[in-house]
Image (cartoon, rainbow, N blue to C red; front, top):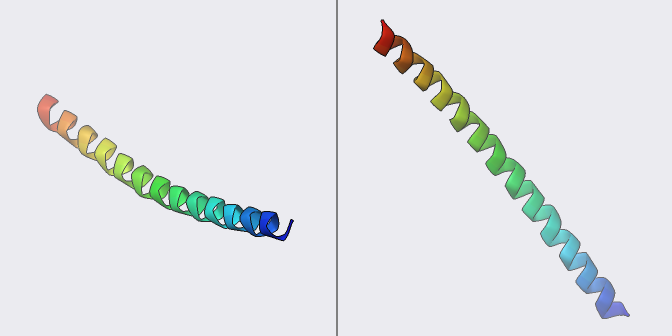
Length: 49
């Protein structure tokens, strides 16, 4: 039973770490998307101007 608890704790730790890492990556990707949308808008204005 003690080993089961340790396994469960380890899995919870892994899950927490993965969720943190994924959230961090999502924030980076959101910023990159924002920059690309701005660049796209700028290029469209330049092409039609």
